[in-house]
Length: 228
Image 1 (tube, rainbow, N blue to C red):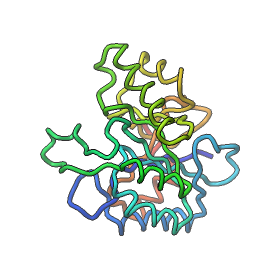
Image 2: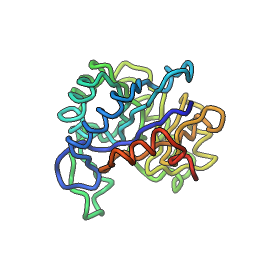
Image 3: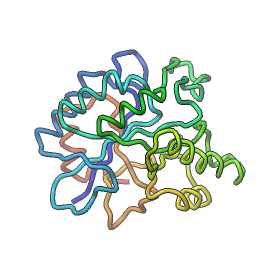
């Protein structure tokens, strides 16, 4: 059985291409619960005998604490949020040239601790959300490795997963990640198949948009997402 890894950013009713509205997010969670999906973290995959999903959020927007967390708890799901270590408590400055995306507040350290206290998990999304494939090796190592060290110091937790900013990676970047992390997430489209996918190039399903119930069925019960 394949495991869908879900990709979200912001959960909010504001008019922003990064944001999924609360009604739609709850509709999706209800679909997963109704169809007996169990949410797990990647390191908790022990077998494929039951239906599992992995829920992930990129960037660490503050609205996850306000809007997403209560709904995750309502349906008894857990999730991983990928944090940008140098931008904790700041804003999405990497989007400042994109006029369709407004300034959005990121979680502060207190928010992150609250997220963790409620059974959620944290991974690294680098130090500054730079395009890693455009950096020299020294700067790429700093973005990838230092973010893990900083997050572990701040949270007191082991940071074992990494998410490539913009989904950008190459052999050199992947090799750096392999030295420090147990798994890494891309923006490649597919359900995760342990027999087929490298755990440092994990594919995900983009869920951050309005999706009909029929489309949800296609994504989770057919090869629809697996066709490259």
